[in-house]
Image 1 (cartoon, rainbow, N blue to C red):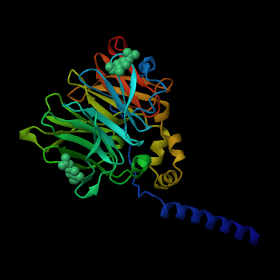
Image 2: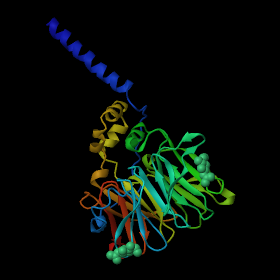
Image 3: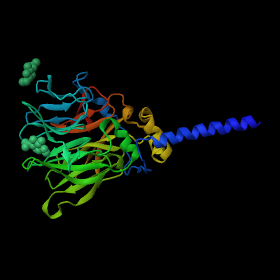
Image 4: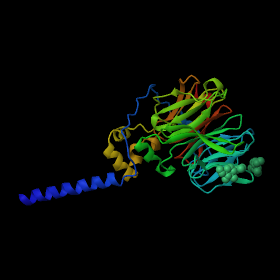
Length: 358
Ligand SMILES: *[C@@H]1O[C@H](CO)[C@@H](O)[C@H](O)[C@H]1NC(C)=O
Ligand SMILES: *[C@@H]1O[C@H](CO)[C@@H](O)[C@H](O)[C@H]1NC(C)=O
C-alpha cells in the first residue's frame, strides 16, 4: 500500500514538473480573452464556392491582391515572388524578393508596388528592383509589417501586427492576447517613419475612406476595426468603426462605392474560445503549436463581408466548409468582381459581383 502511495506521489511530482516546465519555458505571458459574440448573425450562402481560380498552381498562398490603373493584378506569394497577371490572362513572376514573409501590397500613385515584408519592413518594388522604405521606427526594428495604404499626399500608412512576435509565430500573439500592434506612417518626403497608434490587438488591414478623412485599421483578435481621423478638425482621434465581428478581421479594402470589404478569418471555433479562457491551455498550445491548427477554423472555412461607411454590414459571402476557398485573407473589388487572396490556396479567387448578389 505504501509503495502505491509513493508511486502516485512520484507521478504527481513528474506531472507538476512538466507543467512548471511548460510555464517557465513558455514563449508567452498570456492573459484571458473574452471573444465577443457576433453582433450580427450570418446566414451561410456558400457563394465563395463559385469562384473561378486565377493562376491555380502558380500562386503559393497569395495573401493579398492589388490592381494597377491598367488592370494588371499583383500579388506576393510564399515562394518569395511578386507575381502579376496581365490583361491577356498570362501570369508573370515579376520580381523575386526571396522571403516567404510578404503580406499586404498596394500600387502607389506613381505606379510602383509598396509591399509589407513581415521580416524587413516596408518595401518599394519597381522595374529596377527592391528598396527598403522603412525598417525601423524609434530605433526599433519593424517586425510583422502587415498591410499598407497610400494617401493622396504621398503618406504611406501601414500596420505592424505585432512588435513582439514574428510572422511564423503569429499565433503566439493571439494566445498571449496582449496588444502589441501598431499603426505607422512613412513620409517619403522626410524619409521618416513614426508611430500613429500603439497597443493594437494584432493590427492587420488598413484602408483609407473615399474622402480620405479617416483610416480604418483592423485589430484581428479584438474582432473589430477602428477609425483613425486624418481630417483637420478631428486629427488624431479614434472611434470604433465596427466591432463584434463574426471572425477576426484580416485585410480591409475600400470599394468603388465608398464601402469596405473585409476578409474575416474564421477563428471562433469552440476550441479557441476554451483556450482563451484558460492560461494553462494557452501555455500548452504555445509549446505545441501544431495544436493551433486543430483549434482554429481558418483552414476549413472562409468569409468576407461588405461594410458600409456607417459601419453596417450590408452583405457577406462564405465557404462554410472550405471546399473551394479557405483562410481567405483579402478581398479586392475591381471591375464588378471580387478578387480573393488566401493563406491556404494556390490561386486567387475571382467572383462576379453581379451574379453572386442576385
Ligand atoms: C500577354 O501580355 C504580356 C504583357 O504585355 C506579354 O508579355 C505576353 O507575351 C502576352 N502573352 C500572350 C500569350 O499574348
Ligand atoms: C532613408 O533613411 C534610411 C535610414 O533611416 C536610409 O537607410 C535610407 O538610405 C534613406 N533613404 C533615402 C532615399 O534617403
